Image (cartoon, rainbow, N blue to C red; front, side):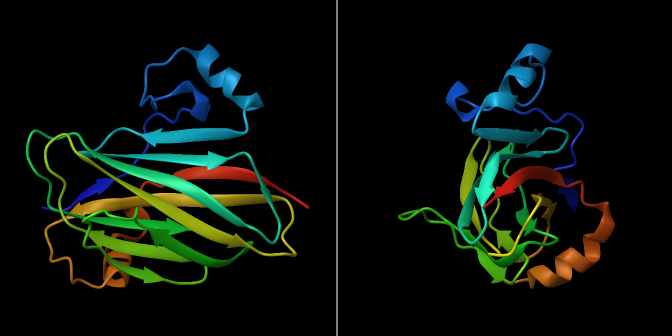
Length: 184
């Protein structure tokens, strides 16, 4: 069985200082108060695996920007393997996905200039994975930095080439989009 994750039905921005990320149903005042914060969080909620992304509102040209990506199993059973994709269409010279030190994730990832792709083992009921996506912002970058985060739950081995999965799912992935202003 192959099921997309990250297909957003409701996107919500909240400040990181607010504590836990809320998937949906928050009052409009909570979303509007996030515009003055230095960070925000975006969540996609309409899939067996929920994806949450925390990102800064402003990034500096020539520096590394870090995104916190959390995948949460919403099913009552263990999921199949999870395909995760992170991409930046422009203004980036290097993209990587890092797992926290001491974790027991056995991911299979590719690392490229503007995207990083991973195949992860299935998630137990109610459990989550947390990753850090890092992007090196080009020194000549101007305007905005857009990041896209998405994926699918797949019935494949963790040794599967993530590039093949991206080709297979293509445009059907619903991407969680982040937008940061590039400062100099």
